[in-house]
Amino acid sequence: MIKKALIIGFGSIGRKHSEILSKLLGKKNVYVLTKQDDIEFNSFNSFDKINSLDPDYIVVASETSLHLKHVLSLERICRKKIVLIEKPLFNENIGENLNNNHYLVAYNLRLHPLINLLKQKISKQKVITAQAICHSFLPDWRKNIRYQESASASISKGGGVLLDLSHEIDYMQYIFGDLAIDYSINKKVSNLEIETDDYLFISGKFNKGGIFSIETSYFSRNKRRKIFIETPRFSIELDLINSLLKIIKDNAEEIISDTNYSIEETYLDLHKAILFGDFSKICTLDEGLRTMEIITEIQHTRDQ
Image 1 (cartoon, rainbow, N blue to C red):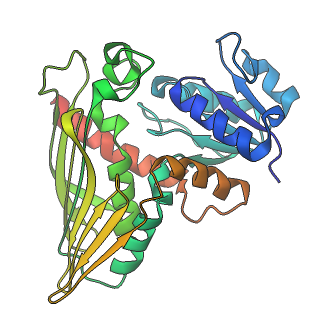
Image 2: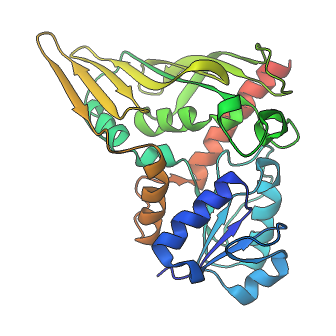
């Protein structure tokens, strides 16, 4: 049973995890490993103190470029802990097995009830095509920091739309199975003041035979995050921002809305599932590494 949690890193996502787990476990049972001073949580600044703290649950919420270093440290000093690693998993090859703890990856959109309803609806259908899009405006992402100074703008910190918005690659695999990429374009195309890629388009096939595409960007003021699916029997449109699922058949249109549910709540549901030991919808380490293989494949194509 999970009674004590440790969050590594206290940027915007680390703060989010700390606040959610405080509500679930009580603030006195949540600790943060950070170099920042005077934060509102129990905190310390050295990995050497983790063993004496002996947390049941550890969340790696540091910058992407530090994930591998921090996970390898946990692998050396911890045993049989539940370790949730923020996405994207790593920005480099892992190079060794991770066996000492139970590692999970924080692809929280898997917990969205309409993604799971969509998955159920198409489970016995032949999918002809599926398209995922996610377009947003990076300067609007974080209010507490200039976007030019954010990790998303920095190559060395593991930024870029391919890594930041790898959710779409993950949930497409979660819904449809493994993806095989036939074509990709990933580059900086806008005038944003960043050094990272701000546009991604990939297309290919599911292992079950359908065709897919994914398009994401950092530079659109027309914010949208949607999935479109075509089957022989019906068409589907899922609007993740507005929690709206539309199923269109020959003579009917069914609309399923959950407008009181926001993407933010997927973080809460992610932690609740882990605390109650239900890992059925949560990204495993192997699944996260498969997403990293796809990302690496796209990067190699881009850099040739």
